[in-house]
Image 1: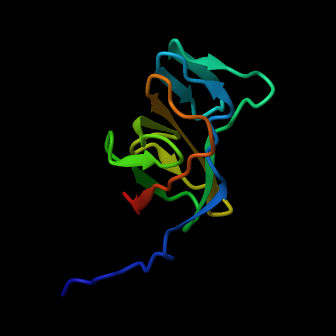
Image 2 (image 1 turned 180 degrees about the vertical axis):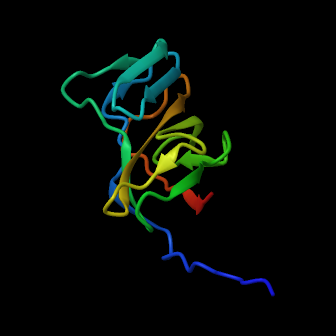
Image 3 (image 1 turned 135 degrees about the vertical axis):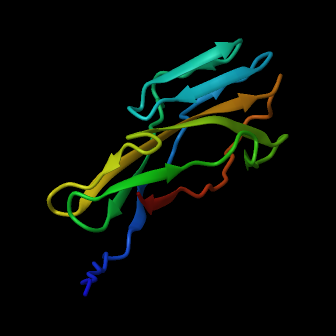
Length: 141
């Protein structure tokens, strides 16, 4: 006779605790603005960053079973855009900390997940506020 055991996991959940912000910048002839998962901001091309509005990464709280590992699924390149008064700007190169299959909940069953990405800025992008949203999916390993 064989014995069978089963373990029921608590649902894994994710909640947004801080929205992503690219801060202020001047587009000029275009380029990119990148926010890393640690909120470091950089620019390429002729984009000029405005230091007084520096931006920050998105933050989420992942909750589930203590010490459980999980994977992180981020959006594909150019599937998310920011819309505003000018042309839409695509987001590319989503990264996270932890990344990929590297998520592990702490002894209290939670972990902070930070997400960064690059914004593709067009030449002479019209000034104004742009917004959009994206989805991060987490699943137990």
